[in-house]
Length: 410
Image (cartoon, rainbow, N blue to C red; front, top):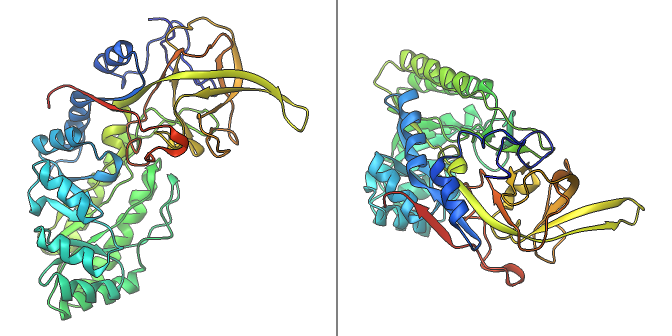
């Protein structure tokens, strides 16, 4: 098919004569080719295959899919069939997970930010596992979720990740000791420790450092006669097909990351002195590469900026407010299936709204696009299956969310 190939740094489109990346399945390509209107397409068998690889690489780890990455009912139901539970951040997400077939015991309330009302509603729905990072939240759990199991989230620096997540969540080791002692003293179960090393984490060292931080707290808690039964290694596992904001393909060292996680689990089990189970909360790793958009070109234009510099702009039918929220931190590979072999020009890629933030890599690398691109041309946006639905507005500037098409068994 014209225009297929592997993205190269700064190009945004494939190299002629090469295949589309292997993570883009034939099923997904066929669905994109068949689509005549804009839509977000998910390949369920592809998601299931990625899940199967994950549990094979990390045997014995319980998966709690981070629902915020893809709150699509069909995706959640297919993960339940494969044995996944869920990391939920609100009573509404808990209710959606239950409707998808999850058991309450397989749902972890992973948000450390919870009102009393949130806690009580989650408890009413049957959830008993709660993340926390402060004693104030523990007191609320004791009042509104008596007997619940507490997971204390440790802070990490987020180094090596596209999104570090290092400020809003997590506490110091010293605070973690106080949190877990308070949990015990208020009748809760101090069950586990958790971390999150940052989203789209590219460095195995991030998990190695997190394991060492967990190890220190685990040993200190043993000295206070608190014996944990779980460690939650959180999210952060990367997708394979994204480009950084300058257009350079990200090449996550998954084999090394998995090796560090396996070694870390062995190390923590040796330190624990009591049986210790593990959880993981992948989000984008499972769904990003198996979701893609069929969009279209609104306009390719060229104009001079106030600086006098002449610049091309490619306006797409979707952007930051209807599916591509993360485009200020990364680039998505673009395929122009009807413009193979066309001369390329560097352009800012932007969405359709009347908002200056709705621009793809404006402050990063320009994207090379076909000079012949015309209004109405189809564009395939790859590796955008994570957060495309959850970050979409209800219709900013009148541009509606894209409809979702799900392929494979339901």
